[in-house]
Picture 1 (cartoon, rainbow, N blue to C red):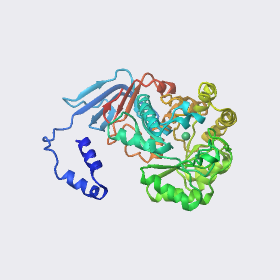
Picture 2: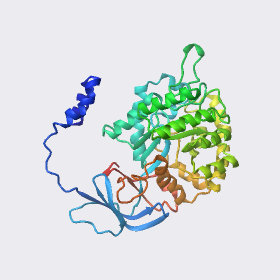
Picture 3: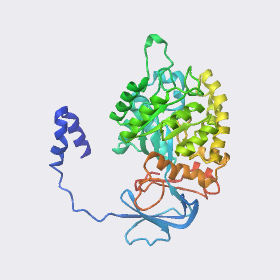
Picture 4: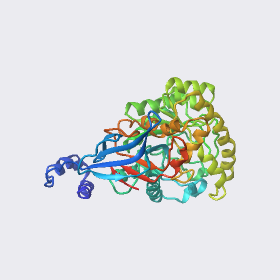
Length: 436
Ligand SMILES: [Zn+2]
């Protein structure tokens, strides 16, 4: 049915498209009388109450269609329900990674990306979407992809063509000419500019609106230099306050959130003052930045585990030397500064920058957060309640509660004692369907 509808739509000329919805819906197929929705009961020895950081024993979650209808300890299982008994496992809400690049791989670092086509990157995304879902991440925010590959991937997942997490996608990240989100690998005669490049308020508004036109759920901005880019300095700010206010203001007015890649202290402050929803990385956050982020309730999305993997595997992925040199300076410093931000109470949402390291290893970030002073319960909250709020999806995901999507995972052991059990997810359900 969907295939027929979409091919009909594709075949119609543009003016006729306006009529196509009415034309298609006026001839619905004869539907069978609606049967009462089947109930699935998921049973497990324990369940993590992520809001309160407590373990609930004898857990039962009732699922109807895509949604949870009831959850608690020892709930009665309705007769005729399909029972999934997970034995001694511990249930949690599906995890959320607020910073991925599903359509990229570590091997794409540096000049390797030049030879990779947009269709090839999209298929990389299909592979990584499955890997990420199987690792227990049932939702991600994908913050920057060339050629709108992440948006194509999101739509393919939503249409049921390929398995993967729910995706809030950014499309091409916005940035200044020569900045972290421009293409700075080519000599001038090639005339290559990144798709998200926009200078000045007028261009910034144009590109914000173009991204939204082509499907961006969130606007990603490169507010400072970066690590894995040539010729820029992570400590310097790139957009001006005026440009940031224009982009973020427009994104908000059009119902989108905005995320700012920012390492340097000045870029962090400018983005926060311009009203950004989250600071990504935050490597050089200082006391003033910490204070501002707390005042503005701006989320910080640290991406710290990547440093370990990148420095260990730099040779294997042929990371260009200037990028490795930057990584060696910035990433250890980031841990110190982020540790201070965590202790000071800056709101934290979970993110990994997976693509810099292999997708599927996302849960290794939890142990770093705990090392920097979080309790396991706080670390789990960053990837559930907090990340769902940052995505604007707290009405549908982030906890195991009636009315929410039945996105759940199960692990061995007690993640409130040892967060590393989340690196070995045993069972995954997304939208009421068991995917692993
Ligand atoms: Zn990133």
